[in-house]
Length: 632
Image 1 (cartoon, rainbow, N blue to C red):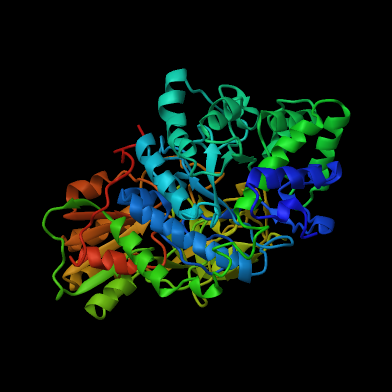
Image 2: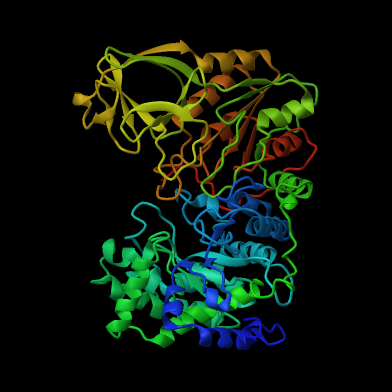
């Protein structure tokens, strides 16, 4: 086995790929077109899987250093910093590859890094606004190139990880994203949308691209001629490895109805330049079966399969899979995950991303004042869908507490009792996230109420981080009480307490009693302090996220009311907006002396904001996209 030419590291990689490709049977090759490429024991090939999430740190694999969201990195305008963040991320991914069990399937965690996102932030209501760098193609391309460079490393032969650009092309909406078409004029296509991808691909820094869910000018991106006529035309070689987005190949028939059957659609995608099909999870039999049928019908031939497999093998050679003794990154150990150096970098990145939106002289704060920190984001940090698990959290209140000594912390949430004749009593803390969506936390345990599979409620979630968010509810007026409605399902709580009722008329009426006035507590605390710092914003899994666009750009009504109540009694109020996207802050701009923005900045957010607010660090961030005054 070790005498095969493809094992000879003295040969150029193209010759080694040719040798290995020639030794694979057709069945082995066609099986490699699925995301979960199986092992080939007779040749010593391990299983290979495309894709680990690495947008702002290693995601989905457990505890890892969490850096600011991409839009926050965009606000730094610092290419070298972005490169260092990517380098730290790729070093940690190498540790996960070697030393952690795979999150899904068999084999090792993938070294193909699905990042950066270089879609342009043309509309701040886009649900995935947090994933992009900027609305500007030049700025986006420069930071995207820096991130790719950091992921790939600088070895002349081997990659530390293999960066994949997302999502090609003109992807800017989540509602009906798989069936909507972006209408892009030729000049806009060349000077705006393609302009973000072109420099990165042409530089050779990106090893792959992921196609987008949407259509462009009526044609699905997964069968776009632009993959060959633009992407691969720019690439220094034809080895650019193009992967599908999850389930997108099936969408060509099932949602978009662009093809009559899956064999035809998969054949068209393969010929258009899709090299790997991320479809049906670990079930490779279904997508591979469709490709076999396409071959039998003469829609593809073995050359089409070979072309895609060659690109995968080229990538695997560059990742050092066949040269473990020579791989310069093979010795990276688990001690690098959340190491001191990466913690310091997380703090630097969070600090540099803070943007000063307004200051009438209140900032920097003196180190002596009595400070109260108020709001739903005052003493907690949130992870977004592509975050890793934060090893620790330094909230804004904790960061100021560390710098100043004891600060007062007030969430400002109302505590209410909900009583019904049949379902009993719930005592919960209520937080408004906008659009009528509220979270309800059990007053005793602090855990979120979550809708269970059987329609019942349980206070069993310490954090909200799942694809289907079952923890948001609407409290809709009904007579002299309210009815409870789950946001995701749209169903109401019925008389037995289960969310099975389809209309308000069939829903249980709940009596609502205010037990603790959060706004009154915040007002009193602000009145007794010298400075009030109000921390407002979004939860990254609620009202604007993958699959869900925002309806407007206003602050949640409850948060806006809390801010105004505090500012009424404490004119020395600083608004800290912590968000994945822009808000319209007209009232704050007119009435408050100081306004600051940060994205969800990761584990060191609180120390970063404390340094800026207290003058230990300059607020060097600059907005990477327009903040509009209204959705008009």
